[in-house]
Amino acid sequence: MFSCLTCKVTETLVRSFFQHYETWRRIDKREKRIKRLKAILDTYATQIIEGKRRTANDAESNNLGPNLISRFLDYSKKKNEPITNQALRDIVMNMMLAGRDTTACALSWTFYELTKNPHVIPHLLQDVYSICHHNDDEKNDDNDDVDYSYDKISQLKYAHAVAME
Image 1 (tube, helix red, strand yellow):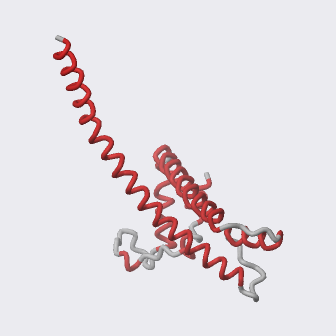
Image 2 (image 1 turned 120 degrees about the vertical axis):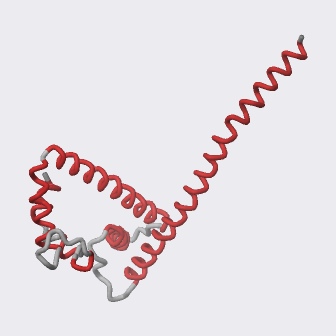
Image 3 (image 1 turned 45 degrees about the horizontal axis):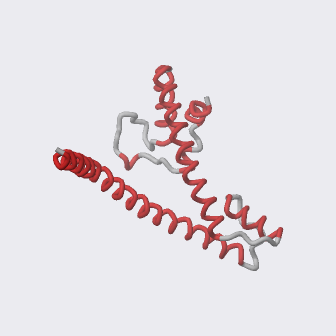
């Protein structure tokens, strides 16, 4: 009887292990993917930081520009307190991730509000067509006649008002 009980306990433990093995294996794959993606982001952030450090080390460069990394480098230079690449990388990563979440939230809320106020959509589309399309044909879906450059997007007054609302 005791040996039968031990066999059942062992069988239950082994079955439980193999049921959870697939879950553990998937987690391991996710962690590997996260590490691989993190390495890509780290490389990107490092390139940005190295470029800004080169600019900061130029003898002619008194003003590094209005971006965040340049401001940290400029402050560090003025206070004579060096800032590590790791600290700058953390700042870059924080800004990239925070910007992504903020943008996603803003877009979600904008589309939610547009569903509550559908009368705004034709005016919004008219704003986009009148500024970004090279011709007056609103039904033309040819991407060659569309200009979504920064300069054109910054002219979208109604779209800006919708986003700010």
